[in-house]
Image (cartoon, rainbow, N blue to C red; front, side):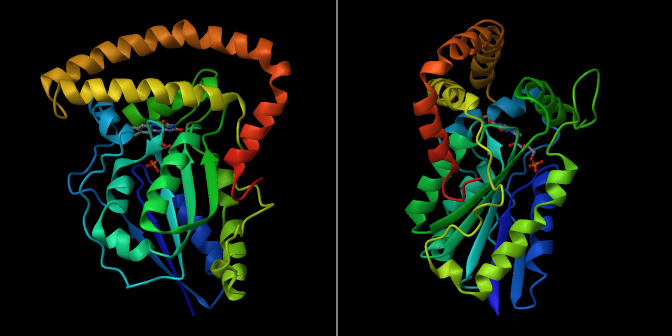
Length: 303
Ligand SMILES: Cc1cc2nc3c(=O)[nH]c(=O)nc-3n(C[C@H](O)[C@H](O)[C@H](O)COP(=O)(O)O)c2cc1C
């Protein structure tokens, strides 16, 4: 019997549904036992979010200053850990970062194969880079990464995802599609579970992976690579400013958040369209380096 731990943090329940579908696939195999656990922050995060609460988590998320989480009643060790996480400001969500920084995680993850599963808007590349560092610090072995992103073009989800987070509304409106990952994509996640069950039967998790190649585990949008890198650089500067201005929910921090929101709006209306135009013009000359970057971020599972 192989023991699999499925760990996740999900607010609206979307990532939970994704993982439940993966577990459906795993359970097709009688020799696989799944222990599914939700990570819980000691001070829960609100959902839907208010504007200031949403931005108040920005500095801690970006600087990987994880929150305190409830300890979990788990077995000593597992054959495989499936870690589901969402992205908050190009970083793993605070409860997941917080859990990975506990003594319990240090014991659980050491020398253990891990498959990460992301459910987010569409910007997960830097978040996964940060996750790789967190897992390496724990001595875990990352075998695969699955990333599911919200339906619709980037420009649309830039509106539909924040609307969903701030109001709880996921429905389509005007010309905007429904928020979140498409149902048919969630439904098809059982293919990863089935493949993992087969791999566990053959002890393939004891190798260095990947186990999920050729199943469409990730789809890297090359157009977003530069945007994520640039945005993250600016996120680091603003995070430090917000943190210096005061603790969460303080007047000082909220003042910097207000300035940041105005700055962000100006950026979206001016620099972002300009940047898109410039990138379109230079893209024929950067095909090789872009393909190389895409191949890098597709690792370990590939398309
Ligand atoms: C505070 C916050 C920040 C977010 N930042 C990002 C982001 O940088 N990139 C991204 O692709 N999605 C981002 N999202 C969307 C989440 O990754 C995720 O899709 C959403 O929270 C739904 O997940 P859940 O309801 O299963 O927890 C953010 C969500 C929240 C609440």
